[in-house]
Length: 130
Image (cartoon, rainbow, N blue to C red; front, top):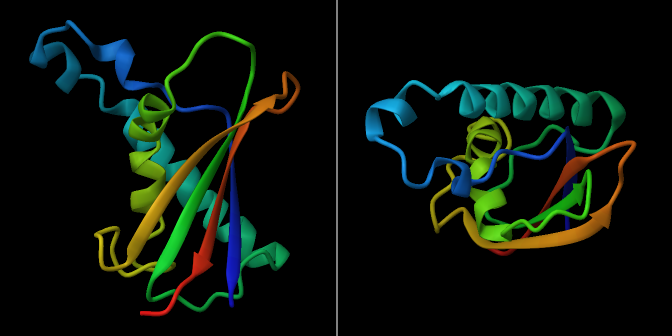
């Protein structure tokens, strides 16, 4: 069973930051999504270079996102997953064909702990039968 690991620096902006704001303000803040899409693409290239991914696309996967947080502030895991959407989009089509239910069977979010020196998100893809 194949497995690939992608490491992205930092922690994404959660969805709670945007609650209670007008849609026109939120529309102008698409920068964080673009930034995470860029970080995802860099993580794919780095994984290929270091051997953390063999370069062959997966057909169907289980995805695990491990969040190493910069501090002990309260955060919602579902909000962090919302912020990670751009990075998951960067995995297609080179790593997974699409991020729909036929290709990503399960997504698990784990608060792995606090790492003040190196906050990051580790995305692990495990191949499952198609």
